[in-house]
Length: 430
Image 1 (cartoon, rainbow, N blue to C red):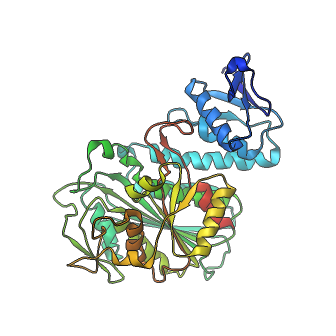
Image 2: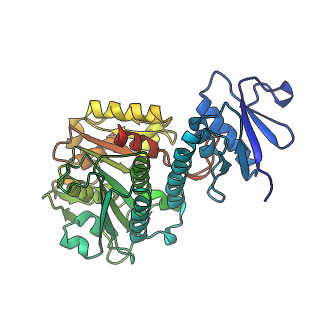
Image 3: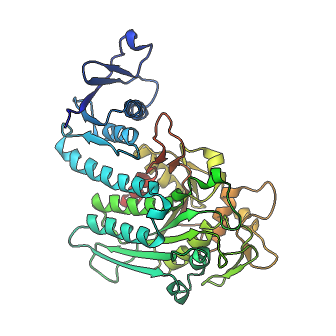
């Protein structure tokens, strides 16, 4: 094995031989990242790592006293690529930080790898099984972890209508995973958080068929499920002592003679009827089942996460994840958590009047907004609100516009980013 390329940090400017305000300089198998004052150090380190990865450098060792766990993490994010992962030697980092850094890297790279898998390699059932395995691997010995997978026709027996109808066009059965993480040992302990994730393992759009250019990245449409599984695993590895239930709503959205059709009406367990006017707005249909199920255990807080709308990406781009909620205090907590862990989160408008913009002539609501000029991300949240008993309090909806990078840029390689895992994990812990 060749010696790793060493990388150190400096607060001194690079020699002008490397260009004015150069971020990187090199000498005999070593690179120096020169940190300036105008841009955040976290961002500069990630940009430098991205440049080094683009030079086909495959192994690095971080050295020098200037490194801390956050800057190491920034480097790890930028140096990762889907083919090679991120082979980084952190051995010179403070021992107290090293174990947590390695475990964080392992968990979030699991999230990235799951999202990057081709759709044939990741069925709805495999996504559920792998998510449970991840949680089982990180749980402390004294904690209880119970899980159930409701699959195929069994979904109807439990009245999970949305997941069943979205997934019935596929030869691979749709399913719901329910994980109960209970570190208290008390079966009667209250549930502090319920997490509900969208796990569409491939989204063709159904009969509202996507063009090839939009469909090519739709292996990533299970990003909400992977993100929440990763967030729970990371929180557990950092000492989570609260009871949390995780609900992953998983299906392929495909075309067949049995697939969901426009004009179909779905009747949910809570009695709400939904007219399907666009089969490509399927994520909210599966999340509705998860939200209904989550409330049966009366959690104190509910968080859902989904790659839900193109409208969120249009609003905030791919650098940010979007947040929608009517709870100002809970939203502020989420925004502060994102800042604390150097992730980017932006709150979009969501108000009572959005609830009136998803009308239907044939059902209680439709699965898309009912007129031109309405906010797509906000009305998607309004749809979900119809399945929350008290949507104005203790509920956050993450529209994960920043979870996947279709083309590499100065910060990220092409593919999944794991962006949002640390924010949600921080919320669970704090």
